Length: 474
Ligand code: SF4
Ligand code: SF4
Image 1 (cartoon, protein in one colour):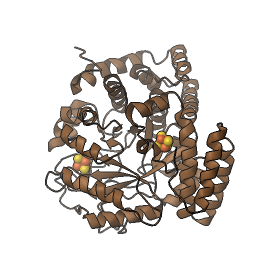
Image 2 (image 1 turned 90 degrees about the vertical axis):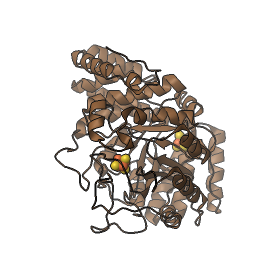
Image 3 (image 1 turned 60 degrees about the horizontal axis):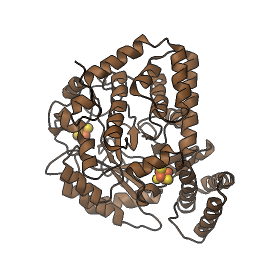
């Protein structure tokens, strides 16, 4: 029986197994309907998004002309919404103690040979200074789930520490938080601590597979995990970040699942996910490489990203350093709007060099370039690396943010903010070569700001920065 109900508060009804299977069957049966596919893509140009069924149909299609069109429409939508800015962030691992038994993660509680550690507040300070010295302004904090080692009080204290550190011209202006599913009460506390986005990956939406992958620990409760975003919203957090770990399950199933989740949030709270992350499984300590073999091929992965861009145009798409420079370069053209740079995926990794002996990384990083190298590369590609955190600091979160995005006005804000925060980066952290190229790009893009008043203001602020002033935003 199909029990699908997008507004239900029960995980198994807003993510309906039967509805997903029906959707996949429909997509398979209609995959040669080129005319219908073309119409879907034409309609998508209005940037109103797609249903999960339409998106599944596009993903199933192997017609070369339709595929080309998927990429060109995705690119068009991305440029319309976000211009050419790419937002930069870094993960900060606070603790890898974890009581869960996730089969694909080296932090699982049964792994006895990985080095366990948890940063003290003083160590957090050192890590944050190292991140500020690189030029980062936006962090995502990551912790395993452990009731005594990583209680909510530790998370809150750490957030306070991070926000309090002002080193030279540095500051962390937005802390996104990736912690285990928790209670409404704890989400309220996170909200009051001034977090940006609450991030929680579903890993897979397939309940049976989810239960196999999470045999022990609190995370084994599929419904509690899947309903976490609802509790976060009820706790006042209106920017939530979803994601699946591609390669854990049938990717088509999870692709429909994540869009169904987005629809649930939109239908229930009037606001879909702020971001969607697209990690793929990577090799890691104590993880069976035969079981998790990065099962989504590159060409399919790129189609997933492009169709997500078309299906939920208002949602940022995040790609981490799990992916190679090549894949990241392609992904930012077709949908990805936020990437990490210079990342360390181990506890304390920004201060202490990761070595064979002390490595406690959650996964192998594929893109090992420094932040400056990533910034330089983006500039060469004509993208503006942005260190902007303006929306959340100006109270533009949740539906206020979404209405700006949906009307396309966000591009008028993102572009100036990207230029001004890039200028900050260039002045304070970049190599001379990157600085020269970056300033030239800012000059070139400045002339393209359509609103004269905004252009003048940006010009003034850029000059103010030459005199040492910082932190301008729209
Ligand atoms: Fe723990 Fe998260 Fe790793 Fe699971 S994925 S073992 S919850 S750190
Ligand atoms: Fe993000 Fe808002 Fe800044 Fe654009 S203006 S980069 S949406 S924070």
